[in-house]
Amino acid sequence: MVPHFVFCFLLNGIRFAVTLTKQNMKISKRSLGFRKAAFISIVLNIAFNFVYPVTGVATVADVTRNYPALFTPASYAFIIWAVIYIGFFIYGVVQLLRGQRHFPIYDRLSVPVILIQLLLSAWIVFYTRNQIGTSVFILGLALFVSCYAFRKAYLAVQYRDYNLWLQFPFSLLAGWLTVALAANVFIYMHYLGWSINMEEGTLSTMTIVGCGLIGFVVSRYTYSLLYPAVISWGIIAVSVQTQHEHPSLSATALTTSIILLVLTLFTSVFRKIPARKEVSHHLDA
Image (cartoon, rainbow, N blue to C red; front, side, top):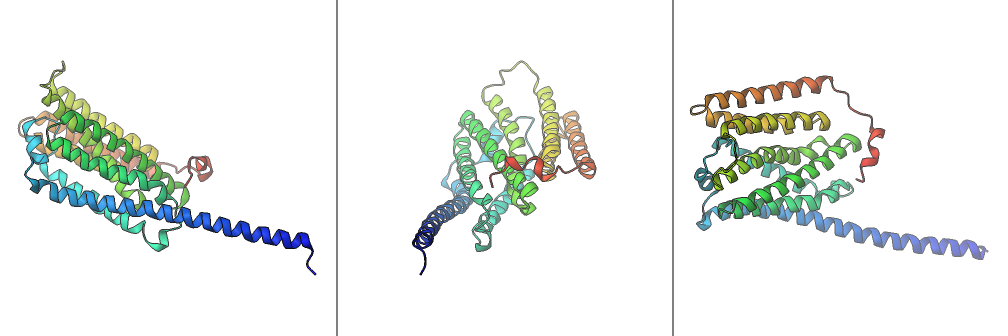
């Protein structure tokens, strides 16, 4: 005969296991729902970028030409959006794969991904409707969220052995939005009639150097090569855009981008990766 207390212990254990399993199933379904929503938001944002221009509204390029700021990348540089959207699409597919279901980092990133897609679509709407101030604010929010997601992905890669490609779309987007936000601020100044007491060329030079410093510092602390590389891409495009009418500014942009790339590569060879235990408490993934 099995003692009564043993029987009760086993019965309560089974009940607890069943309850815990049901709770895990609910959490799993909820997490999968957020992942699906993230993928849908990516697809919708990509589709929106193709459909919206054919509605007859002014394009992003049209609005940009109305405010000829010095700190404006050459048109070829904007092809990086295709790389960004491809990166997010691949990310969206991978995070839904059955083999990735048990990795919680994708659940942590689902809401930021959704917010990023909504903000990027909203930026296009407000910018093309000439609401420049609102569009700058929205782009700033998009940069903030992308940096947050970039940091989460970086920590997961660095200290939880996630694949390096996890941070690819976030570092790519964060790097480009760093340059894009600066360019949009200059456009907003032209929209207001350039009411600041400083020559545009001087401020453009300061912004170029500032972007270079930001790229180096972020690379130094996140061990990312992609983030500064994207900033260099944007600054080189500014150099190309200004090479004929403003050769000194063009030379500054080209020099800054080269220095940024060289310093980033140089420091990446000699830097020391911190031990996992030093920052393990920063992760909840």
